[in-house]
Image 1 (tube, rainbow, N blue to C red):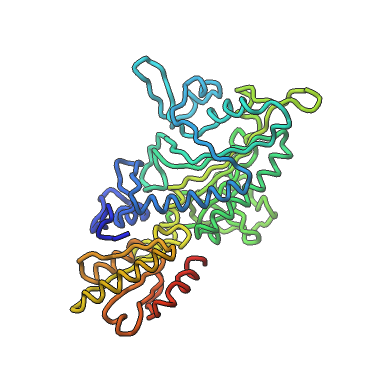
Image 2 (cartoon, rainbow, N blue to C red):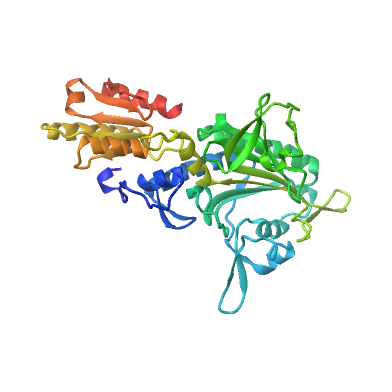
Length: 419
């Protein structure tokens, strides 16, 4: 893509009301635009990152047996009345149409997926069953001051599992824990993201969260020195040791919740009469689990954790582009432009998504914007690099680049992309 034709531009300033690091950088670099508190437009650069995250999540959900569906955001009131959440969920958006019919804008989809599954589950032979979606969610969030970390409208992956008994739920629950660990490792947060015990609410004694350690976090967790499992602050008063290994040495950190898992059991299957017949024809309630990841929240966490003073630092797996070709104009600008175009064409033909800064601005502005946008590898084409017989290749967090021959550029870029 030619940077001169990119729909958005970088900004010198960001809205004064923005306080979070992720919002400031994502807006300044042209990844998102704020429509109102908690509601953002994902611009071309931001959408590319979001799609990379979505594809990683899809890959792991498919490996875990999930089949992707897409459910409506507009929910009938009566579904929410069946679970008694119409009047008890305080962040539920409610709307009324001209015929006085009432609806909810879905903050989650148990009330929709359970009656849907009831159409296809009748026998033990139909279980287990796994479905997931990536869908917009709506919550009346009054604390929308954390950028894309906490929104009123947000994109979420929710996976629902249906089982014949709790033993099968427990087995698949561990499969999903592994899938989540894989996701966070693949997006560059694996080393600092911890499986965290949290309150199970009305579902079970515990649920689990995945918490990414950062000073910008809204949650407080206590991490076991022995096994790295964590406990959320909300239960630490009653849980003085690690529930995983029994360790008693816990360190306290701030963190961002990037995923959660719940053993729902029969909490939602009972209100809708979701049951199956066993081999003897006896009825049993279907046992459920649910597993969520907010895609925008995960994107914001990556920015919060990995950004430096110069701007965003994207891991190669989710970066909007693999390479950023920067053309540095000079007295011999025609030669430089031709060489830069050649490099851009070569990378594109080899399958590397490449952003080519062909703008008519000075080198300092180009380099500053490249750091701000945060693409993993910068390829500088200049009079100096041409005289040296190649291009200057520099990693986003490296202090200095190196001159490489264009014939070796593909191999080096392939190694960087596959790390």
